[in-house]
Length: 231
Image 1: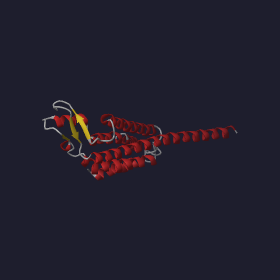
Image 2: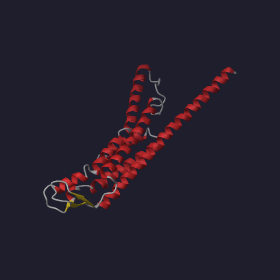
Image 3: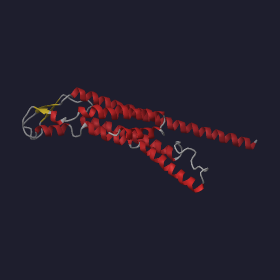
Image 4: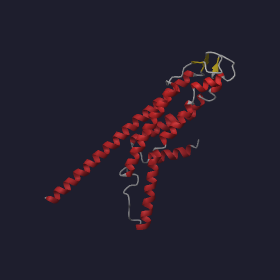
């Protein structure tokens, strides 16, 4: 993994995030990405090779493993991290689009002119882009949590499963390797995901509340100016 590239992305997103957004990024990169890369991925390495069934029937162990583990936890979490982080970079791309417009505007009208007061200020279209990214991240988090629970019927990995799928000769017992360790990591990753959902919801309410306060202040200021003109 290129840590300098990751650090650059983190600092770029942090530049335009609120306090809740910065905490969200810290949780994602420290408690999810680093834990996933350093520990969780190794726990599930060669997991199929350690899945043991009490039969020597060719193909039975593979069929049972595919039935109970249709998709690896680590691959599902990797896909989840990709989906929940991509909407964040929509904000960076929108700011880059504003900066490009600002540069072209100055080249056309002079360096002393400005199209935006602050290209990174969250108002207008950028505010909507930021809010949309929060809704998308929250939706992806919830969908992946539901998918994980739906596929495995629980966040807890069983020690033993029973399988009678062909070509298994009868009902055979199959045993998972390190189920307690995997259950701990599963609950940890699920807990981190829930924390991210809570942070996203808090940031949504914060943005809406800040927008309402700003609009009220503008209306109040406009009313005062109108009253002065009438007086």
